[in-house]
Figure 1 (cartoon, helix red, strand yellow):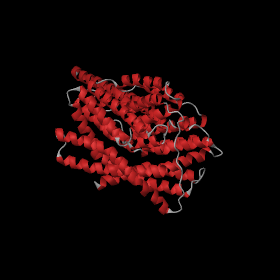
Figure 2 (figure 1 turned 60 degrees about the vertical axis):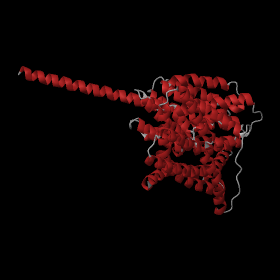
Figure 3 (figure 1 turned 120 degrees about the vertical axis):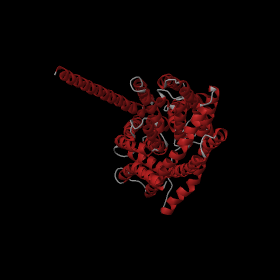
Figure 4 (figure 1 turned 60 degrees about the horizontal axis):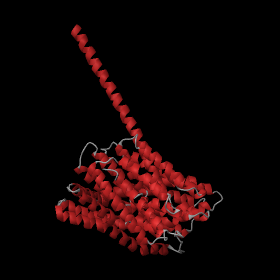
Amino acid sequence: MNKILKEKIREAISSVLPITGIVLVLSMTVAPMPLGTLLLFLAGAVLLVVGMGFFSLGADISMMPLGEAMGTQVGSMRRWQTVAVLSFLLGAVVTVAEPDLQVLAKQVPAIPDSVLIFTVAAGVGLFLALAMLRTRFHWPLARLLLVLYPAVFLLALLAPRDFIAVAFDAGGVTTGPVTVPFIMALGVGMAAVFGRGGAKEDSFGLVALCSVGPIFMVLLLGIVYHPAGAAANTFVPQEMFNTQDVARQFVRQAPLFFKEVALALAPVVVAFAVFQLYCRCMPRRKLVQAGVGVLYTLVGLVLFLTGVNVGFMPAGQYLGSALASSAAPWLLLPVGFVVGWFIVTAEPAVHVLTVQVEEVSGGAISRRAMLRGLSVGVSLSVTLAMVRVLTGLSIFWFLVPGYLLALGLSFFVPPIFTGIAFDSGGVASGPMTATFLLPFAMGASESLGGNLLTDAFGVVAMVAMTPLVTIQLLGFAFSRKAQAEKRRAAAAEDEIIEYDCGYGCEEGEA
């Protein structure tokens, strides 16, 4: 176990080191940073590395097996109505205390936190039920998405302008580090029960549909609730005079995140305990291992969320503000591109997705290819988000063409890549986006005198959109390569047959 943990921490170091280096270079050149904020960031980076290591190990040995076992049991139930109700309850209770959602809710005070959180939870529950039924009845994912996303944009036309970006951001932050491993494993278990030629395709798509639900529900909330006078909270930096002040910030906040993570994990543990008592679906040895994994997950997420919220959030907002108020605000574009390229690899749920993709595809779709595709997508999305901050263009000018392209590509790529791509969009927009990129955009927008809710919010939605295109393009290239290899193999086989036939004929004549 210690050897595996060390390997996970080494992977975390390679993921977090680039973004740490970028911030350090910026703080020493174009955006000089107060020493206290820099120390918070560096301490946060250390917690990030250790937290990611523990979380990755815990997800591998607890969240994934628990979710897969429960998916198998839910899938084996005869009545589809029972499957829908259980899926709704699981989706809703797991989402209520999702840490990413808590971060977003605190930054949008126009609506009470509890109202926004329960609205999003209802959306996840409803669409998780739809996703499970899709797997049960083998409904094509692409067709569902072709119906749901046009409906989303039609609904957005009726919602208050200041609330549209928040609604799309809600779809991204909902699929965070707690929900993603569990929901993805749930899909694998469900697909295993209804094994068919397309079982691999059915393993993906749950996260994609669960990302649509919150957008629907929050848009409806905006129409009904009429959040007039909406505003956004911004981070107010505190003065720190020594390292003890820095340490005190982390010590003060850690118990709060412990409570949030414990509340987020509790529904999963309780739900599995009920299933275990009912069906005895996991032997005692694996059960003990899963219990240890839950503790690893708890420790990892507490360290990770403390690091990103206390260390990365103030650094992100300060850098965005400093670059926007400098003599060259256009630097937001290249900085956004570089930050987006590296920051996605620091998302804990991304590593869960890439591992599962590699396992389900039997190694045909490598982790490296997935990470490269996600890096390209997120770097483009952050750059486009900075264009919005600089110009004030409506988010519709970016989301509508992006989703049209993504939905159009679904007709030309293997179905498994459509599921993976739309899952990737939800996974890429995790806590690093909510606590670094969103404050980065908010700091820049505030310095430029923009509207935070229309110009800064939406960066999460942008991050969730572009992987839909880049991963499907990866799938298109993959399928073309596979077809070319088949043609070469067939041609080589024909040559061998012709050679054997000719050789045999010569001997016959002799």
